[in-house]
Image 1 (tube, helix red, strand yellow):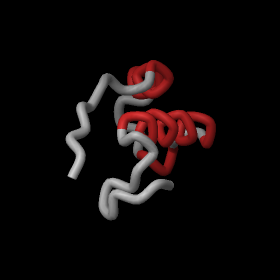
Image 2: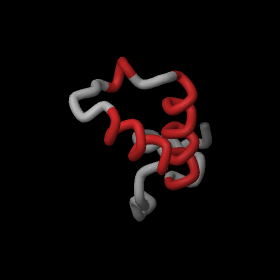
Image 3: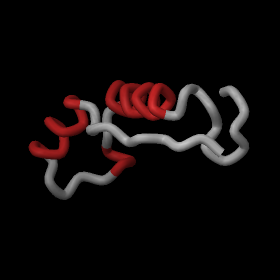
Length: 55
C-alpha cells in the first residue's frame, strides 16, 4: 500500500465553491470535474486507490 499525501484542492474548485456555497457535485461544470480528476490522479501517482494498479 502506498501512502498518499493529500495536497490542497484545485484553485478552480475553490473559486467555484465560493460562488456556489450550497452547490453540489452534480452541478459542477465538466471542466472543473476534469481538473479534480487530474489532481487526484497526480496525487495517487496514477494508481487506482482501491486496487493499486495503473489507471
